[in-house]
Length: 335
Image 1 (cartoon, rainbow, N blue to C red):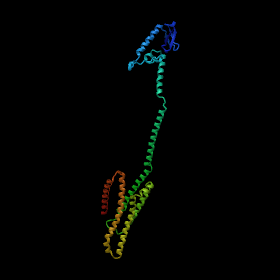
Image 2 (cartoon, one colour):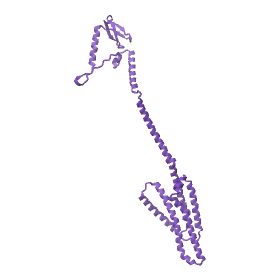
Image 3 (cartoon, rainbow, N blue to C red):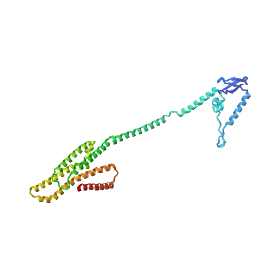
Image 4 (cartoon, helix red, strand yellow):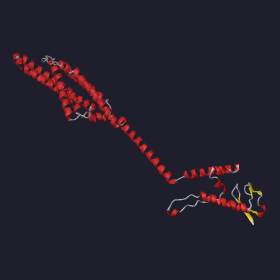
């Protein structure tokens, strides 16, 4: 009859003859020294082991008071690796082997968790592509808008219009200073030479204005937009009205000369007040063109500074502007 026992080193089941009971031998698998028990001792050891396992069984609450049995593990090394107390009883070589197996199992779990998932990878790739496409679209839209507003047609049109308005404002101011302020209004001039020179001066100022306007920027804006505006029409009419004003004085002086040549000087003195009214009416027509140009230019500047003005705001602004302009005109006429 053979004796069955378990190697304490590797957990392998061994069978030896009855004659070796009570002796010691080496395990053929791991070389550990194994003490061969007597048959009675083996039975008692088995009974103690079964009693210990019975105590370790955990009760499970449920219907009928049923209990879950604890699974017995017969692997020698894995059973001893559960706690530090069991692994401490192992030889150093087996302790290192157990630690290596434990580390390998943890790495295996991590590798299993990080296992490549094609569907998840495809979703992540699509998500990245969508984000990159959105960012690229925003960048392209920003470049397009910047090109349109800062470097493109809209910016060129706006810059051209601003420069045209600056040139127009300079022309209006120069016309007022060099032409209107030099016209005598207190009495009827005796010579038309001054007014003819002023008319020629107005013509030269307008020619200079046209040259500066052509250099303002985009030609399409100047030709198709600005030169078709009411402001340019008023500015274009101002030199013509200056020429008509000088022509009116020439006709008045020729009429006076006819009265003198015909010996009707006294009659001319009676007609002199009517001639002065014609003279002032011609000047008022010239002044009307100038005032309209000033109003349109100032209104554009106000609309740029405050684009949210409504109809009532424009009415109040126009009333104040007319009151101020009429005050200036009265001062100029009285002076």
